[in-house]
Length: 174
Image (cartoon, rainbow, N blue to C red):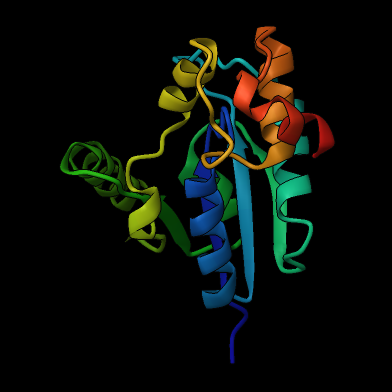
């Protein structure tokens, strides 16, 4: 049986339980999963590529078949150079689908041997996004159910925001 490797690219700024949900499910479906942290010049990430990779590595340490990598340039070129034939893209809503379909069709045109697989997160994570998470924490909200504890600590430190009073004990002991 051939070795099946998939690529899950993204900005991951910041890593959420929605991302982890897809990573854990894909790790069961494929022999190897490469989670690639993208450098996107159109976005101004809060965390550096290295910081995002560190947070991902800590979060997936329990998954031996998951590798964290850095992605620059075109996703299909990265996939082709590594012999990867499947790209995983997460979909939360119809608006995601429109953008993702356009990307998938262009990727198909550039590298017909690389297939895009769309996956929806488990229902409990459909509403979770990195942008919303950063907005909630910036405004003093509780994000403990949206991101892993190590990500929350780094996000709060980066933004200079203390945990909400009802969460202070939990965050400091985590």
